[in-house]
Length: 497
Image (cartoon, rainbow, N blue to C red; front, side, top):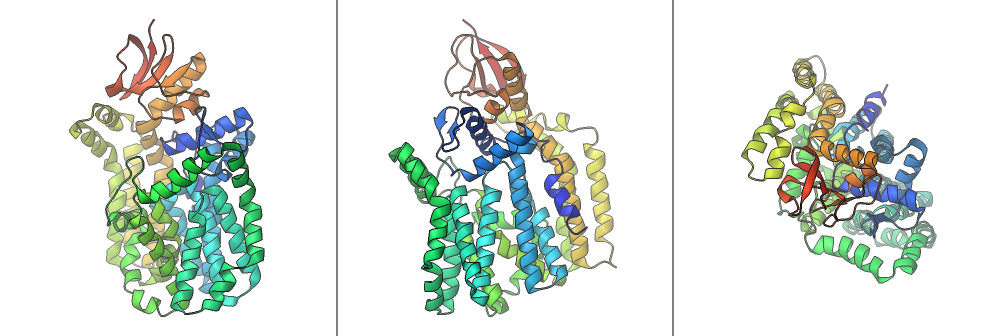
């Protein structure tokens, strides 16, 4: 029973929404091309080498697709399984150091907080990386706590898997957490044992080095420039793909990503001073704080980056939830009140935007909402109000119920509808191209999921006569063409002779 609702939160509607562009589409198309090409060493996107991320997530997605077929559920399953491992690791860690009730709260936070819930259902590398970071940092604490070498060797192993999943950040975060903790405790001998364990380094290299060596031998400087310099160094020192933000970016993003559990953040923040006097909670704050500061300094900012430091904060939330006051339940209730109005809000936002593409897309929001959307969303809101008013239940139990209600509502109703609004036309257009076996291209439209649904490489260029092209309403090519399909701002056309 303990795992029933978290499992439902991770799996309900997992395969219903279309793949979201750009990230889900890019990972999924690279996985499809891996299976088609039989090249399990390198990744390709629409026939061009893709150096964005290492190989492990593609292997897992390809294995899932090979067994289950090419569809959204199979592509997202590795992330959902990684989230289950993440939840199990946090539950076990808290149970060892607190009690069963606190462990249960930690598990439910991992499963139902908004940001982790999204991460767990995305066909990208982030949930898998977060699993390895969590396992590494928790085992690092076990080593700091009891000094047993198997704990330290596991840290190196998880870091090696992290290097195969997303790169140097898998080393940076555990290394920073351990270094900051040992610096504050002035324990240089422990730091040296952690940093210079030869068996650990051999284990890490055995896990990660063969693939990196093979990529260097195969692609040479192109791999160095693409993966190391562009997608690691430049991602920190500059702004990639327009993903910028100010100093307050993550201070605003983190509470939003932890909704509805961030209602308990005031109870956590009140305990910072005593927490830094206690070894475990000091370590958790250092882990969380480093991630927050490091990515705030980064030139490229994406909301999910801060989730790499969310695990310690979720553990602290689980420990402090019994101190939550009933008045803070207004936060999860207010969030539940958003969902019935979201189709109308997006429709209104579309009317106010000056961009023809987004105006046409968001104009669909209200009409695409299924008949059951409003009745179910309102029913969940009313049930949430009733739960919030049950004073005989502990406040944290009421918050737990509200979070579960939101996660199930999002998975069963909101995410499928929202995905249809944003990506449904791309999915349908791709399937039309696949059925017609028509050669297709992308024209000034970055939508790699189209290639997944078309089951064909779709290069980015102007279509030749007779070719199909997927484009946007505001970017139609200035050549004779016939519109084959249009919904909202998405247009599938054929270039005329």
